[in-house]
Length: 274
Image 1 (cartoon, helix red, strand yellow):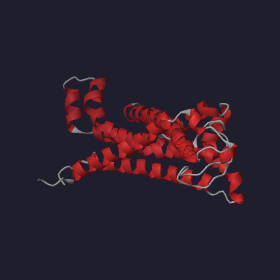
Image 2 (cartoon, one colour):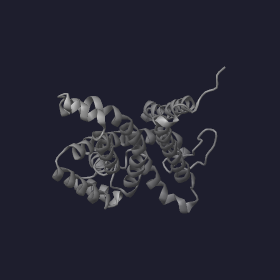
Image 3 (cartoon, helix red, strand yellow):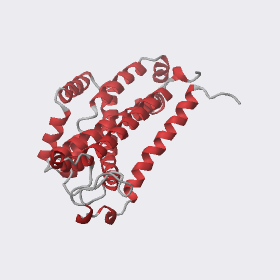
Image 4 (cartoon, one colour):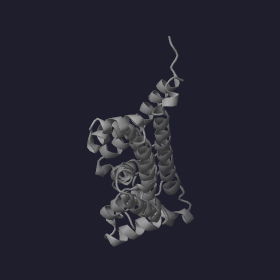
């Protein structure tokens, strides 16, 4: 049997990590609300076979709450990073194909947004929009597009100087035709890799803003809310409400970040024949 080359191995690894990620996401969605209801009779129990993550001060199973919270945080991260990636694609193309003043204005805007720490900017936007889910989504989407937009802008400028683009222009092809048939096929891999790599930042910022009280409401089972609630019990020796959900969030973020790196290697033409 012929051994797998590097690209096939990367493809299998990418599919495997994608299955794990969407499996965790699906489990969180399928858990009914009554399963995470509180019971004071089982409050503050340490990790055991019945409750692998233990229970919190209200007697709620922390493993189920963590899975439920991961699905909520993942939904917020997916929506926010998806919108941000689309903004980056449109802005990057507009900067590279527009007039000189438009390119300068967009470059100035990118430098301005990147010059302010994301957490502070998200808090300001979320507070201005009344906090909650809407403010959180707008804040994350409005602050995570800059790096990808700059990358796409540079890619478009490089593609516009290629000979086949100049030939298409001489043959009378419109700018829209060149964009669809020459530019977008080269930009889509960058777009998808940037989207996947943007997601860990979005979910971590969602957890941080919710932890600080400017994100999702307290009744929402998000990871940031769970960690915020657990801070008041650390001094009493209840380490599991903070450590285990937080560690699960870190592992999920590392999984998605690794998935993005594998996709980047998968789309790299230099690894095609390895």
